[in-house]
Length: 507
Image (cartoon, rainbow, N blue to C red; front, side):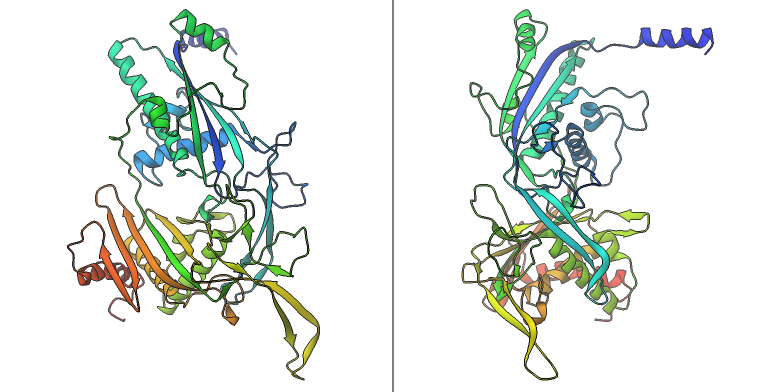
């Protein structure tokens, strides 16, 4: 390096503006997991394919600050610009989390996010999965995997510290502080409301979480007593202070208003409830600690519940929906990539994430019953030697409710049409969910479905209700519409699918 280059670099360092921090805001919150969460460590020596990330000292679960920052930044970007949009230089995400990756001279993030460690040694659930051939309905060789999950109910203490710099102009200072605080409140509100997923497989129901309590400390560093208070503050504490007021809403805790903040996310959601007709069996890969049948239905822990609950997993439901979607497209004689665009794909080194989020839901008021079964020798008609087995599916009763929740991001009209056809097959008991569908398991009968189009400019909400043997369809935002006009409106989505697949007019 020449003397000229050294002098130029020295001048750049001396003229670089240092941050003059005049105010610090510390926010702490208690995060609780609503569904199992996969925080993988990448350890290749583990007996499972995806082991949990743990603190090396306490063996508690570890949620890194970088993971939290990435989830919050992505949420702010999507809320301000929509899904799949790019960041801009002066948007909320870059203001709160620093310059974009492509900006080498971007500003440093004013938000410090600590690693979060679980309050207790966590309960671990084991899940396994396998890729199914769409042509044969059987498992692909070598495509089985298992993973460790943090059980729902696991708690973490989150800690954020916002640094507010001094600006030259008082008006600029006020606007800067207001925008920065609102950005922080908007991001943390996403966690509070359960809109931000954490960890892996978020689009298959894992990683749903929310914050149940907030505490806020504000320090004006231009005042001597506040500077001393910040210096004496217990920065290493991993719990909320029992002497500090707690808030259920971060908006109230930070004393801001977010009414004017527009949500640019475009999505279509289906929230449907069904009766369970007969039984359902989604096999659990977790070893039982006691005496149990050979095959049991999948159960999972939930916050506030002592015993695990029977669930409809997002991975199982997504597989069922994808297989039926492929069948619909191929039946119409099309080789359109609409299914891959909807559910995602992995081909060699090419991959695309699913735009359809399939949530994991608890099956309410189901009954466990053990059945003994045996294979029959087709030649003799007698029992096959050594083929006796028992299984424990769940059975539906009058109070049993199966809930399905789907969310399609950046939906196109023909994709909504495909989802409506899938809903119809589920509603009419034509699309079974889970295993052993060949002996009648997994049949659902529709009760009610809410279809919501979350559009920034033209929101829509339809409701389909089973009225004895008929369907009642109405527009919940415009009850004056006739039922026929609402049906025609939904039918247009299916026509868009037929047009996309080149089958318009051949119904």
